[in-house]
Length: 147
Image (cartoon, rainbow, N blue to C red; front, side):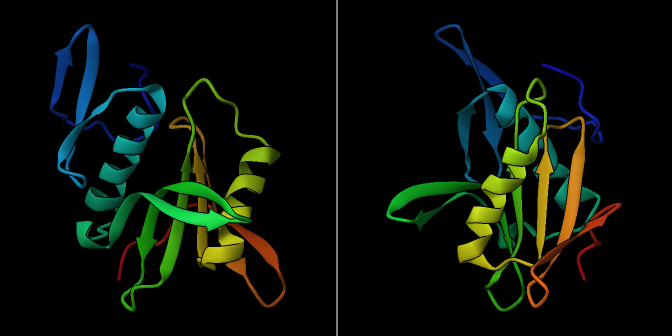
């Protein structure tokens, strides 16, 4: 797998029928190791180990219904009140982050009303805070450490 622009991590992996799987500590099971999953697992590790977000407030592939369609957030972090706080959209390292990546996560946020949005392909990371009153994105250099 591609070396990412995130701190290195140790993961449990296994092979089964010529496919590689990675153990997801949050979902407590092995997941098919795709390039997007590689980015997701690294970003979750970054959130927990560097930004100090507790595992208990992080959800992976949380389902939501948008205009009658079932969608899933890659990573959703809740605040202390159990409300959506951060939405993370993960792309494979080979996928360039474009306006459509931001449009996708912004559509999710119409329903979830999170304070922060993150789009990453493991190589480039874009962090923004949402000003819901002014309906504006404020781009940040990084996301805050959990308080």
